Image (cartoon, rainbow, N blue to C red; front, side, top):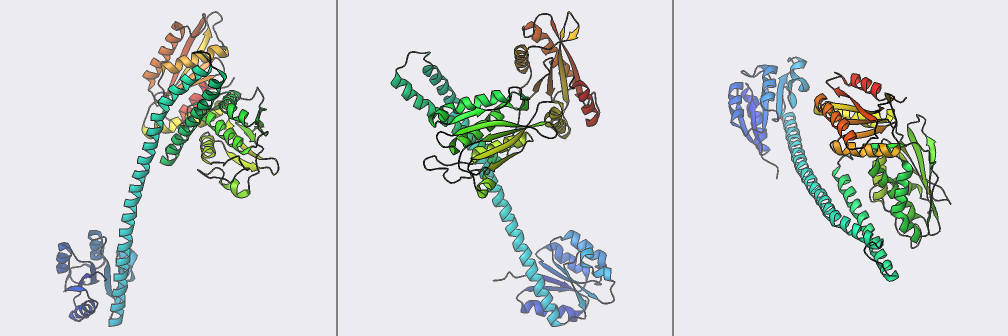
Length: 512
C-alpha cells in the first residue's frame, strides 16, 4: 500500500485550494489548505508536511526569494509551484528557484491530478533510492570491517606461526648439518622429508601474509638499497634447489657477472625471483630447463630488462590475459605436474610495479613461456625517482622535516676522499644501519660515500652525522688513517622549496 502523504497547499484563491484538496483526498492523502505564506511557514516548521503546493505570488511568500528561502530551510521537501503566464520566466525556472516542479494557471483537474501523481511517484522513488543507498553504504562499511578483521586475523596467525617455525628451521639445520651428532642414512632421509615440508610451510605462511596485505589494500613498503642481482638469483636458486633436483629440472643463469646493480628492496626482489622460478618449476616437466637472462637496458638506460623462460606448456591467450590475477588457476600443465596458481605471480607483479617496473608474459608455442620484466638500475636518477621524490612528497603532505646526511671517507695522509673495499664498505653500511632508525634509508654510493635519508630536522641530522663519525672510527669499522666527514642538507631549513631541495641534493649526490 502506498504511503499516505501530508500535503500543504497555499494559494490566495479559494477555488484553487478546494480543487487541490478534492484531488488529494480522492488520491487518499491528507490535505492542509491555507491562503498566505505566514500560515504555511508555521505549519511547515511544525513538521510532518511531506509535499508543498504553493502559488508563486501568494501573500507573505515574497515570490522567487520566498521559494529560495523555503528550499534552503527545507532542502528535501518537494515543492510544486503554481504560476501564471505573466510571471517572468526566471521566476519559474526550476533550476534557479529550487522548486521541484511547476504548473501554469489556469489549472484543470486532469493537469493537477497528473502533476501530483507524478510528483508523489518521483518523491517516493527518490526516497526509496536514498534508503537503499544508505543501506548499501551500511552494508559496504560492514563488509570492510569484516574484511579488515579477516586480514588482521590472517596476519596475526601468520606472525604467530612464523616465530616457532623459525626456531624449528634453525634446529633442523643444525641436525641436518650433523653439528649435533652423526646421522644414519635413514635418519637423513626422513629428516630431509620433514625439512622439505617445513620449507613448504614457510612458503604457505609467506603466501598468507601476502594475501592479507593485498586484500587489505595496504601499500607495499620498500626498503631501497643497491642490490647485486646475481646474488639474489643465486639465493632464489638455493631456496628451490632441492625441489628442482627432485624434478630433474636444470637452472641456468646467463646474466653477465658485470650486470649493473639494481636499486630495490632486497627481500622483495628475492620474493619476485622465488615466485617466478617456482611458477616456472611447476610448469616445466621433468628433464626440462629454466633460464634467466638479460635483454639489456631500456631506452632511458635506467632499467634493466630481464627474461625468465621455462619449458612448460605454452599458455593460451586467455591464460596469458589472466596469468597475473590473484588466485587465477590454470589448467593442468601436463598429467601429474599439478596446477599453476596465480598468487605468487600476482605478488611478483605487485613488487615489480612498486619498483616502477613492468612485467609481461609471452607464450612461445612449442618452447614454453617467458616472463619479461624490468627493474631499476642503481644510479642518481633512480635514487631521485624512487626514493627522494616520494620521501619529499610525504614530508610535504605530513609537514615533516626531511634531511640528507652525506658521509665521506678521507685519507688523512693524502687529504683526499678515498674509496673503501667492498668488504669494508659493507661493514660500514651495516654499522650505520645499527646507528640510525629502522625507517631511515642508508645508501652506499661509489665506494667512498654513504647517504642517509631521514625524516629529521637539521639539528638531529647533525647529531646522526656526529654519531656515525665517532662510532665508525672508535668501533674500528673504517681502516686506520681513514677519517669520516659528514655534511647535512635539510628541508625546509636549508631549502625553502621542494625544487630548491632537489637541486641541492643533486649537487651533493652526483656521479663523478
